[in-house]
Image (tube, rainbow, N blue to C red; front, top):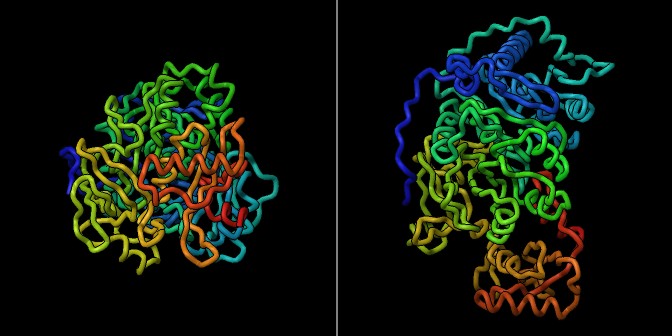
Amino acid sequence: MKCGPHIEVEIPEQLNLATYYLDENISKGRGDKIAVYCQDEKYTFNEMVALTNRFGNVLKEFGVGFEDRVMMILQDSPEWLAGWFATMKIGGIATHAYTYLLPSDYEYFFNYVRPKVVIADATTLDRVREGARNSMFPRTILVARTPVPELQKGEHDLAKLLEKTSALLEAAPTSKNDFAFWNFSGGTTGKSKAVPHMHHDGLLGFESYQQTVQYTPDDIVFRVPKLFFHYSRDLGMNWALRAGAAVALYPDRSTVDSVYDCIAKYRPTVLLNVPTMMRSMLQSPRSQEIDFSGIRLSISSGELLSGPLYEEFTKKFKVEVLNCIGSAETCIGYFLDAPGEVAPGSAGKVQPLCEVKLLDREGKEVPQGETGILYVRSDAVGTYYHLEHEKSKKTFVGDDWVNSNDLFREDENGYWWYSGRADDLVKVSGVYVSPLEIEKCLEGNEMVKECVVVPVKDKDGLDRTKAFIVLRPGVDESEGTADVLKEFCKQKMASFKAPRLIQFVPELPKTGQGKIDKRQLLQQYS
């Protein structure tokens, strides 16, 4: 078992995260400081608190109270922030969904979450409407930002409602143990599952993270991923605002050009990124023209940042990138690099307010240096999946321990190294093999631009590892190249771990989170 650095944190019995994250900036003298940048708009902390209060009063008019759920399905905007904080401020539970889902996905979310109110905008309204047709929920849809000409029954123009309400709102007397918001799992193994979190979880998440990153009121934080990713929402909104930093928003879906435009426009000091975008930024011709000198720190999450990509990015842009590893279940980054102490390719070290341990499949702790299943404990962890009793028992195993189902090992210097998912191991010729280990090996070859390794069945029905590889420009897609790559793997790791099959592809399909979509890949090349 390994504990992160010890820190003392006092948690008041009565706690409201909206007040903690946003309102307390006023009492600290930051009322006139810019809190939010959104394209050509600027909002001070005073203005954001007023907008949040008006939003809360609107929600109360539609019957939202203690433990009622409100769902955000709109582009990143000041209204997104205000709706999130307003829901918690009046005692409700804030939830959100991706903005690019199909109507059938929204129907699932509405039946699962049962929100009393949904906040949408012109970009999502049609799909939200269709998704709501076969659901009892939501009864109210508030449409933010751009006015919609013809609203239907139960739909309301948010801007008009905000104009008519008071900018004064007293926070509900919520307990630290009241539920405040939900995190959603990525849904890579099925439908997304919700993890309810309490007000005190959000406080502990900030206190742990702040020990390493040390946001200040002088920071401007820009995020590549959208606010519906909890990594982006917490690190790039909640925790930044708590420290008095400003947050920069970009409403549309992030592209490499939009990221470069926002860096030039907002001049952020902290950049929250994901590995897929980092690779795209390096490949863009604009990488030669953008000034990164104002960025003091970059953080990567969503998937593990490989050592080669870290080295290439930091060499090019002269900015250190910290790996951050957390989960929907924990509401806290349990692994994070420290500035100046990065071990490229590792997940970092255990963070304050966290304990971790590695167990084998029989439930016994494994010694340092060996790979095991990671279990995480913290007071910021959830306790169950909403409406998923059996899955909850397998993940939330008691005494605040969460089974991450991730494989890790700890080295002699206290750095933690990811080895894949426990259920992703492939048994080849009687020996378990990690696809991620093979991927990391292949990525170390200069001919490989991108790759993924998946289990497939051979003609005898036996499991084999197959590598789908995108080669760098100019490399020949031949059987000879495949043989060279197989031999390269055999030289770098045990020979039985080398991929049995290799297929070259022009590109790898991605999910909305920017991760490689293995299901689509197998369907496409089956």
